[in-house]
Image 1 (cartoon, rainbow, N blue to C red):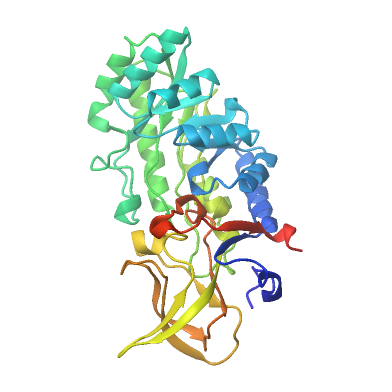
Image 2 (image 1 turned 90 degrees about the vertical axis):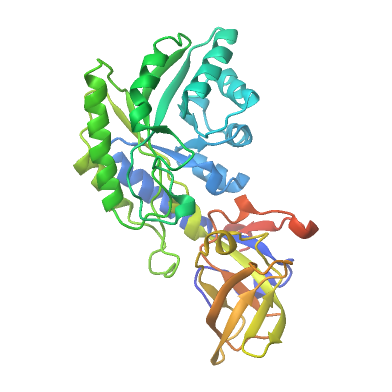
Length: 386
């Protein structure tokens, strides 16, 4: 029995699969984030794409954080959850006109802009409303994040941001866009970073760029370092809260903040990743010529990361304490990639057992789909099942 989930008895009346969130762990994580970031007066914007569950957003709003949104829908969800527009930053390489107008109408804090064409559209829409839009330029700092290539975002090969050799051209063009006000630079080098070295390199590159802009008499009011801090998928109980202390200390040590300058971060996975679990039930035990398969009622429609990124999630049978056997743990989706883990040791498993896929709080529920006409699962919180 894992200490991060309720007793099996509390799950028996619930239809599986479902998401189960540890509200106490989420609040404890937020407390650490606030305490460690406050030491340096850093501003934190939760990355809504990690998990937009309304209750999750409500708890995060209670902690005083802002939000990082990448769609109009996320802006609407953030506003509905009570986040002030003054703490909303809007990123994304493909902002539609209606999404930009939504941000303008609500006077959000900043648009993290990624290209000259986007800047021109924001300027045009702001001009039509008689407003001045605040923008930060998202720059590709050419820092290797040492992470999966699908979640590396800070190099010139990626679709995101402005390449270093384009920055002067963009700054020249900004002088002609009178309905825009440049208030900072924005970076995001990738996700699930478990080493601090890439962040150190990012700080150094940010200082170089800052010096470059100062030579143009441009003083940046804001530096936004994005997110990217990873979680421990293999040992979720030993490391239930990421090392935010070392993370923020790194930026304090290696990046010199100019007078009057504010520093921002956009953590997502590191806040909600460990508080969430996907609870599933065993449908069948299937024995092949070389493999034993545990077939769950959850699939990549509920947790896409293993199929999309070959990602590892700890898998636990919380109904059995018998001797272990080796299984491939798979889902019911009509795709060969619908596999949560190969050659996993689990207690002797039977039909009807409850299986937990750990560390599913980030990019579990938010990436869920109705492929195969499956129903979206329900979500439950630890403090509502007590």
